[in-house]
Image 1 (cartoon, one colour):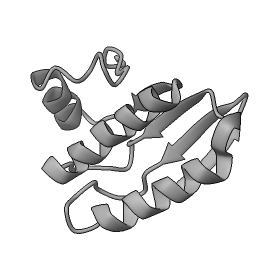
Image 2 (tube, rainbow, N blue to C red):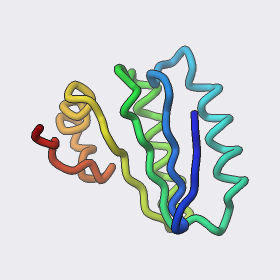
Image 3 (cartoon, helix red, strand yellow):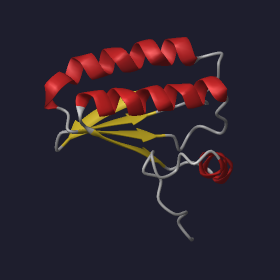
Image 4 (cartoon, rainbow, N blue to C red):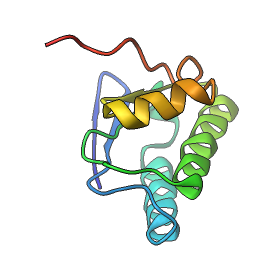
Length: 106
């Protein structure tokens, strides 16, 4: 996982699928990143372009991120979901909550 901050927006790039097999490690790393940047963050972007799959535990991680950003009163957005993940988020009525815009047409 990579993280960077620009204009008070923390960008987190997930470099793997969000599956139950790696969620514990991802959660620990995410909490450390959030604590490191603390009050200087006004928003969080979760870039999931490299995630091919997300299972229920991965979805729970994204929901937990949403709740944490709401608690901190900062914005949250999920960027670059693949078509299958985008479809899942739409079916679960999470696209709008996650700030996922319409699919980009090539």
